[in-house]
Length: 415
Image (tube, rainbow, N blue to C red; front, side, top):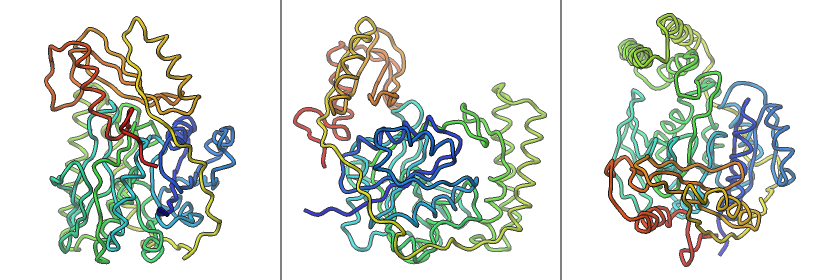
């Protein structure tokens, strides 16, 4: 059966290490045909050019700090029927595209969004949400074992995350892609609103999973503490001008200011910010809002057809396996895991200590999915903080938890 062709766009700026890790993760994705488009600054281009798969990538040099314009540059060369987006500080599960693209078999689905896992590699950062006309999001409950197609009510939209979403290319072209007035923040929210206004359906896909690490940038520190609020203020000004009724804008902005001040004060109380830094960040927020009120708004200009031919990434059909380890055996087991990855496998290494430590999952630089934690520790926020269980039982529980998305033994990964 011929499957829908997909172009995956990765925008990167000043994070070459994160970008190469993202590409390593994409190389394990079990879906075909898809192509990878990297839109990056010189440091990112230089980094990916050193990868073994460099010739299989479409590289788009882009050195302007504007994520919307960068994504549009990626869409211009995207030759797939569907364009998927992932951030450079994120890594997809091997089954990501399989679940993210499946709903497009329905002709009324124009966009899809997956769930996003946070820094511990297990708990969810974002799941299913709706957006109202003020840009506020509200969680919604949907089934967790299959995609749900949603037709939002008037004035609302289905929220997708820029680090885990896909849109039909012809729809993107018709809508003008992303609005370059959003240099950062609210860019995909604006697109969500325009998709809804055009009457398009969006599907949310709980099993289309991406791990998002929140790498440091000029706008936030590695610990997620804000480093600059200028672009957030500017983007809210743009969003208000485009979406929010004029009579409600002043009250809406006052609410945003209160929210951001409260967020900064919580960081100050935690010792992550000084009072003078809070004052400076709030001034930057206001300056950004003033500047955003002057920006030209609209949409980008996209070509109706790709400027470059489809460049299928060489997908390798991979088996998926797991390795169990303890702190005493982890060095030996890590070497085994690395050998298996080099042999073309998708490998999950589970390391259990005899403790109650919380669990963490990360995709290592060597391409191994490594989970570490205590035999009695909590793996998810909903599980007990302390659980007395035999090591063999705990190993099995953790394997069962990820078998659907990573596949082991008879649970083959889709290709």
